[in-house]
Length: 124
Image (cartoon, rainbow, N blue to C red; front, side, top):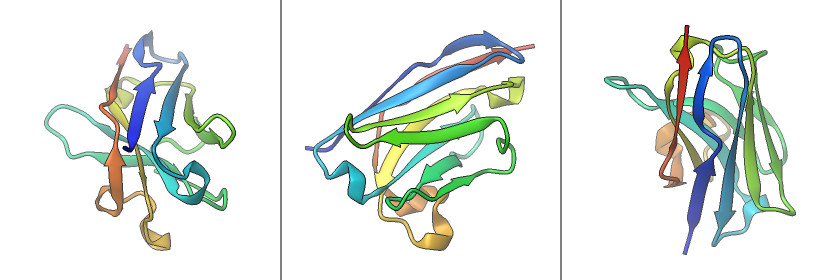
């Protein structure tokens, strides 16, 4: 049974940092692509960052230079280091796993498995 469990969300002031974690089980962690997505109230879920099984990373333009995605295959854990947070980063953050096409690494429709999400709130 596939499970993805996010943690590390919280409330922080603008300019602060948070590190999200996603513990995975039930599939071969090193063989799939993994991504972080977020959804703010009234908005569609959007891709934030992804890491391909080969290690290649992709980022949304809005987070480039501020967020870093990484994974630990030995621990079956995905991370998202978020620095210089802005109020517009406020959202529910989800991790996902799947086999997306190479050009669609940040497309939510390409991912099969999802966690329940962790809330990130950034105040100005």
